[in-house]
Image 1 (spheres, helix red, strand yellow):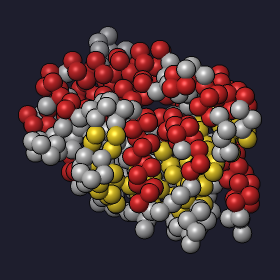
Image 2 (cartoon, helix red, strand yellow):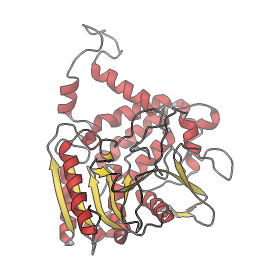
Image 3 (tube, rainbow, N blue to C red):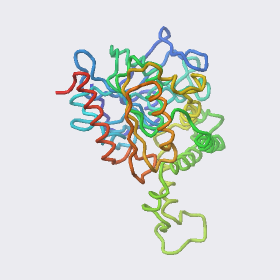
Image 4 (cartoon, rainbow, N blue to C red):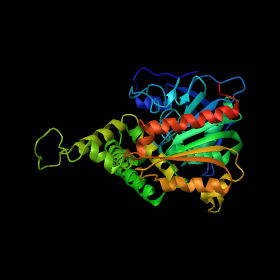
Length: 391
């Protein structure tokens, strides 16, 4: 059932007809949204890796981050690049596809095959644009639960994800505790802080201020707010790195010149790097989806759903937790992760916590971090023995 995509295609076509598998839900199976409306029909695009065992006890759900997608361990159809977590997922790797059946779906509101603002509105035949109801992390998880139901899986062996993916992991553990045997939230928080909301608002305003945004109707008008989306990506990308990593990689080095230009070209290597990050991003991501995804993260506050008591979100849980944070992550600092650990401890939950020393910043969860690999591998192996999955 493994999905593969070896031909680079247009990002717009992926929004409607993705290269991956697609689960479609008709009007009789609506998705209940927190906004108080039903979404129907809708579809979920997903990839799978490995084989589901006979009793369906070896399934792992991978939850992607803000700008991720379902292609976690296979070639991306738009960019042609390897999957964003191929270092972690595959035969013999920490998430061993010789042992586990891995599912990764594009979230509701996304732009690579799951229903989102670029998808056609059945009522008009035109892209939803801003007519799609705002979605939440809980909405994303409800949709994932409906997808998991399609496989006949009663309980997931594990739910794993970093950043926005980690938010989904926490929501899964809170909303469906009986369906999650283990949970691995990485570099995340139980809420989005005011600082994080502020950075997201800068990005959204960059998109909205682009004259080619056309009040969100740019696809109908044949335009794209590429400049605004690129700036949004540039601003966000700075938050994914650490000052130490930026200095180590770029310092104050000039880009292809020996002296400053005394103008506003990309004099410094860091400027050139950010511009490249911005412009390459617009080729694979939809601007309106960026608005929807960032707003979903902003709204996330697990304690608020339980009268401000985070521990109540996990009361009585039997899920085994492993949390991972990074010392140089200032977007979701260790303190945010520790707050989750303290809440779990207050409920008597089974929880382990690892803070990894690194200067790679928030993006460390996507990079080569041997300690993270060892942590996840060891945690899953121990849980597999308890579940009777170990060979």
